[in-house]
Image (cartoon, rainbow, N blue to C red; front, side, top):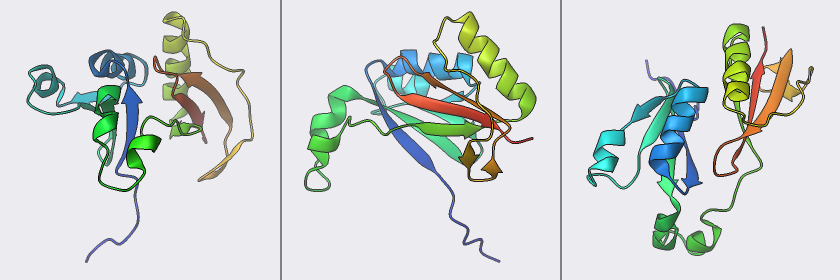
Length: 142
């Protein structure tokens, strides 16, 4: 049987230093680098980090923005930030992420409760920025 459920496959983040960004996501979110050695060797145009078996973040170098020609107006919107991305974690992983961010002196918002998301109200959530200013929300429901 074919599964026709829509899933988030990837999100492209424009970054100034893809290798540094991959390290940031690996050390804070525990994301697994994908194609990092290939990128460093000049064999692929960008690396990624894996959030889970179905979802990756592509770390697109800002220098690639001028090549965004596949859709009229795409080059002008390349690098335009989204408001934020949200990652849902278990309670222990949420606490560990918060600790790692604080250890790395990454500013974080206050921890809130009850914010609405895909699975209803979250027990706790907070926001932080990556090295390029992309805003992330971390939350847990359990």
